[in-house]
Image (cartoon, rainbow, N blue to C red; front, side, top):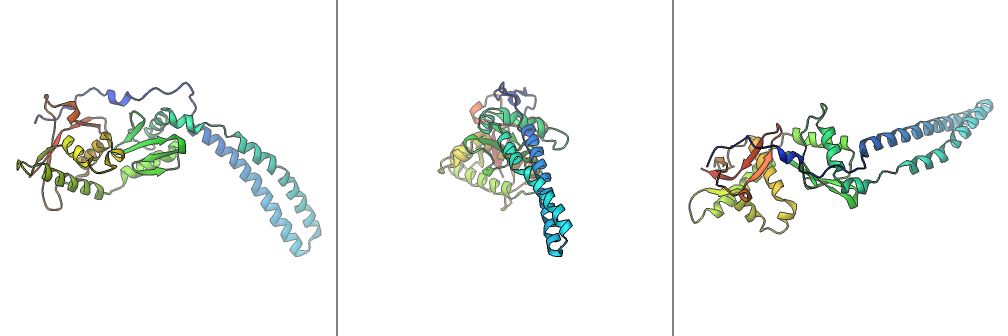
Length: 276
């Protein structure tokens, strides 16, 4: 196999459809609505404080204080019903349209790439990739799916924080298990030839024979699993079988290549794996 070529054109980062004409930002809409609810909380706090003072005055028999607290409570109460209704009606953001378009991908990528999170988000079709995690929107449910987990908090800064947590989490257990699966697959595919090598495409097709595997693990997700193993630092199976990644030669079929983009922007092309 040839050594890996890292000079590929970085066009995969721009393959997602453009942002729609409606340039609404979910982060801005939520920030505005949060400020509106904060105003209700302040009004509610004044009402609650007046009620407590009212109760205290009654308990002590302080008639003057009772009257003052009662007046304050009535004044604060008058601000609540209308304000609450208006605030509830003020939320007009079309979450379904937002998640059905590419707007959520672009907004998340813009926010996550900032200094606070420092994440590289790649766009692929209707998915966003924060290596080694894949995200996709479920518009009809108004939520996101991160990996295999349903994630109900769709606010971009919350999603970015979760992606950073997943990236920073020091957990190689999943990659070790993936390596064991790869070894088992290579052993199965190599039983007649005796050569402990297999193309990743052959391994992926083998795993897809398991019901539901392909639905939960598209080719891009499998590529991210390979990348996660690559960067995990795991060098061998539990039985001590070491491995090497094989990279595609110029004659390799594109359909046999699993291409991902690393966190530092380098394109990585994986072809197969050899155990020894």
